[in-house]
Length: 320
Image (cartoon, rainbow, N blue to C red):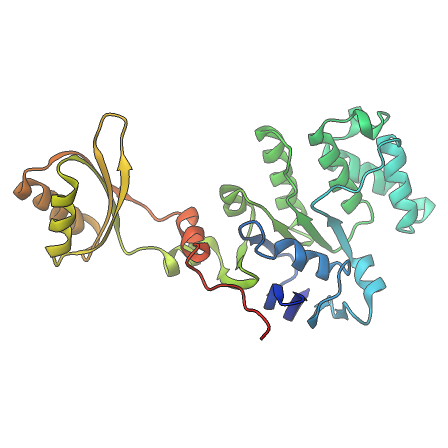
């Protein structure tokens, strides 16, 4: 449904995105993740024909975004980063206005409005002015405008912004339900939400794709072999020296001190599972460290995200 080929957007010498390529299959829900300024919104604006790329292109259900932009826009429901609402309109008037702009026939109007209203839980605020709505309801209204013309593709930029935890769950369930019949790309900063909602994740950093796969695939590919959390009372320099000279310790990191004065280390031994834990327990016993906690730390999507987007990543390419 979506084929992105070498998209690049450059502002003078600065690359907002640089040679971005990925595909999205029909009925797939893709999470588009990245830190602020990574290029998520720029990519979405290009896919929705809001911005032209400097180079590269994309096909939306076989239609080129540069040559067939009107057809592309008909196929997409778009929830932008900033909700495009008119404060003086009532919610129902706004939805009718969007439906008219989308060219929805009169005989389908009620059906399409009812679907969008029920799906987003707007029934009780339909006759309130947009200026009177809470941020959460404004976000719901903007999601409803993206659904009203029944598009095969949804592009949602931070769809749960401003929603409380219960509303986030409702919208997440709605997106999962919509994803059974539509193709969805959504960006979010909430990693557990992306993991629970999306079939696949595309991670972008400094304008380039740095990871692409299911959450489990990314964790297996970029996660650490085995990581343990050690909480202990001991001289920090002596602990670090012992780690340095122990061949069974692959790497370690000092995490700081607990409120009651215990040193916290994150340690990756060469051996995995119980054998790795036994090695670290033996090391603590032999060196006389007061070990309060030794626990296995499972690699999470947050860990993978940090690995792929850490500050030491390659700097943005500049034009010579």
